[in-house]
Length: 211
Image (cartoon, rainbow, N blue to C red; front, side, top):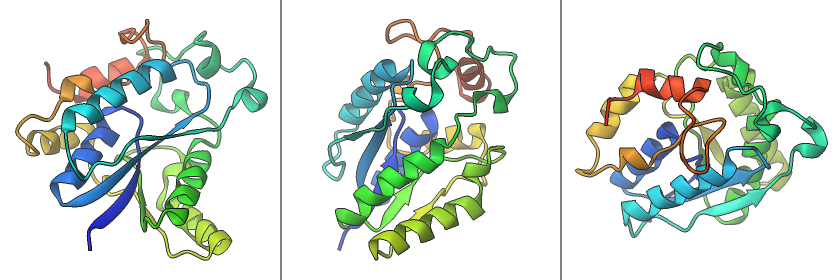
């Protein structure tokens, strides 16, 4: 029986490498995106769809997009307005979005459990400072989903011992033509182009090879 995984996909480098890595290892991959009305989502989805199409893998299932609007909770937060976005000099924790992984995993967990997918994965890397990316939280979410749905789902973050440059090396070792240029991370895109000034653009420049 084929291995199946639901992957929380953003179009960013880490989650895209995870998808390609799983396909290389024989998984049937169900990419899952949660739309919350954030400023960057139109551009993210544009690049994520292009990336997935470029993989041309028979075991890659169509992208599922769930909707969880956040404006009613977060009001005029920078993530919704695009104003006051953390700059390239801002600390990593400046990009924290309240309850982000709680919402992502609850949606993906219900989807996976009701579609016969035993594994939910996300691309958290080493050094992530947020409480909702820690092993204790992920295990708690796994238990909560299984208690609610009577399932036996696993929630895992397989790259927690890797940094950005190590993930870049992993990408280089994958399929011959991993489409690095189709990955995307930016908090204040101009259309579908990165702004080059935000903290996510700076993180990408620091961690990924040129080209």
